[in-house]
Length: 347
Image (cartoon, rainbow, N blue to C red):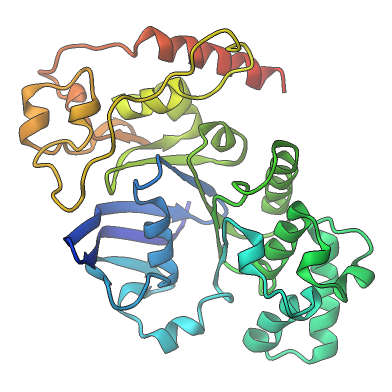
């Protein structure tokens, strides 16, 4: 399948009063045409920074792309000027942010906000843009679109506001849609509706999706492939089935173990011990080593390369080295995987 986006050896730093924070440290991944790639990890792992760099939305002044390429449509987005990026943002690559209320202008009617990118990027007349906006409101499941078109964001519920944000993101039929934890600010019932909407839209429109989340349960329902991030690096990547049925990195084991289960009411919810690394002073070896019960001496001395598990599955852990001791996932992981499989079969 053809790659629509390739990120190669991406390194991003933030310059702070305390020093240089090396937030992204050699990230590589590709996005294929028509697929949904989920990027998962704890807060601070680098998910949002990575995707905002694709849109070139990192804060000016204190952020810097130190190295690497972001290849899209024959161009390296990392080298484009802001003026050049303005022609790509909203047209070829769009983004759905976490909080819909901060994404919408409270003083402008939602219809006009949907029309704006259509007029700007497609040179459409106001009549054409209005018709497209009404079609989009219908597409994302907002009832009475003609009436809603004339309303302001505060007149919509949280779930409906997020649908409006999705409509704006889809306004120009982007080739890539980045969804940065789009269900975080919503309650569980509305989350399910938005996720179902994303799945439906994936079937209806010819676009590729990057889905950012810290919730592995969400990933199983929306993604084709998964990239697991930790400490500014991708530590495991594979298809959804490979990540859930055959995880190889101890950090992925921890994420799976910490997923709440329908059957775990009487169990203590697992939490990965320790804290994420200080990227002001990145560790010499594997960033996860201090929290890894299976860490070896080499984990403290050298960063592991990406070991190949299959043609589509790679993991950066020394446990996959031929000379490493054979370690099975802990019982908590196996138990949670078994529970997860049964839950998925019941859906």
